[in-house]
Image 1 (cartoon, rainbow, N blue to C red):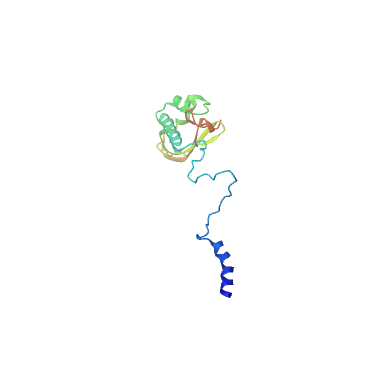
Image 2: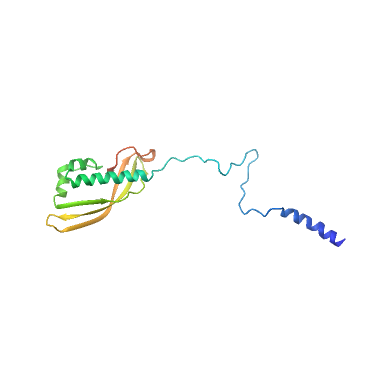
Length: 163
């Protein structure tokens, strides 16, 4: 009789355990009348963020800008700047002190949207020599921008001069 009483007390405890081990995942409550979405169901797409290709385009534009500088085509180089104060003659005067001038452009950052613009940073190493033959080197980055912002870049990249 005692064995039977113990068995009756143990049955509810055994039933609560069930056949499977308890899940370690948290279960989300499901509202009545609504089915739980499948785990592999497609999710709504967010607007595409700028990707690496746009950054590559910014670096290509900056290489073209420096190629114009190196070739002495200051008028075309000036046209690639966001602000064109002083004209091509002033830009040419800025480079008159150099015997040689060479820019090595690195990979651009992924562009970021800010207002009506996209911006990307492009690292640059500039080397060369002054007219007296003394070598120089400088490293930094150039900010590039183009129209488009959150709606996506749509214009040409330009050297941002802090308008």
